[in-house]
Length: 147
Image 1 (cartoon, rainbow, N blue to C red):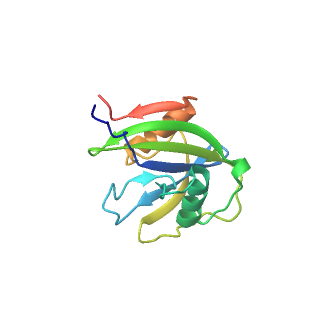
Image 2: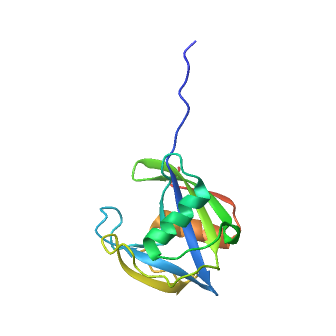
């Protein structure tokens, strides 16, 4: 009997920094993927890394803020298919952090700003926008890009 290899997917983490009705967004630049589009602090899970520390690491690397694990809330898990790639996205939310958000990776981001969750720019990474909409609709699980 032939043994099947288990399905393996990359994992990405996304941090929603919320201040009142606004969220922090950053504009992608010179990455080669969705440049000129807005997103939120995010990144891929490294091999052997736990998910919450990955979210904290990515937020620190991209916008320079720190927070405690107990102040992070999981708000959506998304099974995503985009540009012929598939992965699992974990969306986390926090409204407590230390430090003032700023662009820490100017080679990857060209702008940072606060916007109302219900007034996102047109040029927003589509699967991230879907994750934010699903969070706002209290959907803990969603899919993007599947037919």
